Image 1 (cartoon, helix red, strand yellow):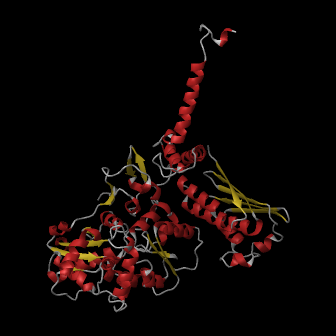
Image 2: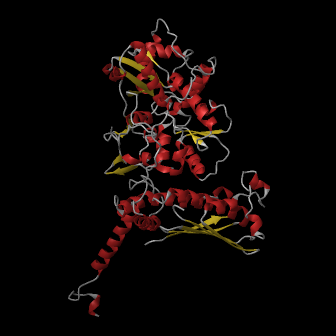
Image 3: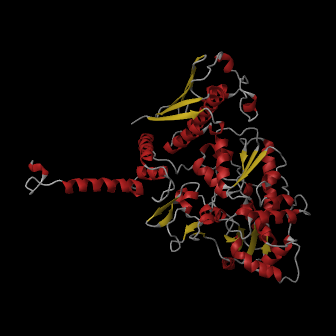
Length: 141
Length: 437
């Protein structure tokens, strides 16, 4: 077998549980002996995405496929969608509410960080329907 | 040098095979097999949590006894500042230090003196700005070992300086050799230790290939003899040369406070330490310069070889520190080579499933599947700390699924069903078998 598939529900109603899925993926990648640099990039990128899902979209699902060549993560939500992807990709641009910002989130670095730490990022989004983030991280890249 | 030496060991006579220690171990390094706990050597970080929780006192720390000092011509005691917090109504550190000399030491060199030098060196390295931020303290050997086995990306953040104990031993031996005209090999330096992790650190050091400390004597071992000497002192020698900064290292926050920079965090207690390391690894903790981590609650005063409650000891140290100068030890010139690590901290992936990624992935998917078959109670009756850990052990080939009593019960039930079905059916030749219809 050359592929390991993992699936997580990301609860949208409990902010204190955000980050659990990425933490589990990190733990498993380490146990697999995956390239440490790739593990770190997956952990950060997926964490940012997971937080976004909780802040903006009421949660969703995370699908992770691990193969020796790459880690592919699909973060699927059914939230409001992103009206202007280009703007959302700008460092410092944020639409996060104040209560979230007061916890230190919502600095507008979520998507830019995901872009920075992944080898490939695709954003499929439709206003009113939801957003899917597809990110790929390759070991040693 | 014994690579797998651990101070933390098991007294199998006393072990009843209960599950207290396996549940508390932060690296899942203990299994109960054949009714006794076993420590998986390469995973153990000598934090001492199992010693703390074992209700049968079956977990113990190996350390040296006081008579070990007689092997050396000139003997130096290296008391951890934690020692001063163990005594009731103590108002002068010199009473403790003079008492140590009465026990047979020729000289006392306070580890808190070296702590002030380490603080000085840390401030300089931080000011130079070449270390990756945030810098993580290297003072707690259990934390350094935890990072080594669990946090590959953080290895490069650990402060590349020897802990105060090591620097104290090296400096004390150098000075004594020069002053007394005795070769360094004939000088013994002995750490008075609050914890087993330090004992291990002497035998199997990190960052250097050999420790200058010749032995570690537990605070709990020396305490009764020392207090009795302290009670009988006729004169007190003025020996102490530490300040507020050095003595402050005994409790959590002391090392950070000495950096005189407010952008720090100090966490103590192994669970809290792990939480901080996880967040650091994910770069969730930003804008901090320094991270102080102590495996024991309260810091070194919470070590398992102390006799006094960590918080009482801390309160006493606050009182003792009150009229001390800020610091009495300062680095002159450059940071001396004996204070610095000679080797980088290298990740030791002992929790890895296999060296072959494909094989590891197969094992992981077996583990995921098996974990669902187990009841998820994490009862520990199988000898592993959790259902997931049992699944991992099965995948590694060191345990059986039927070690789970629930799985075993199902297997017996299914056997019983088969037996009952066989028992209920009659052979065709039977007298009044239903088959005759």
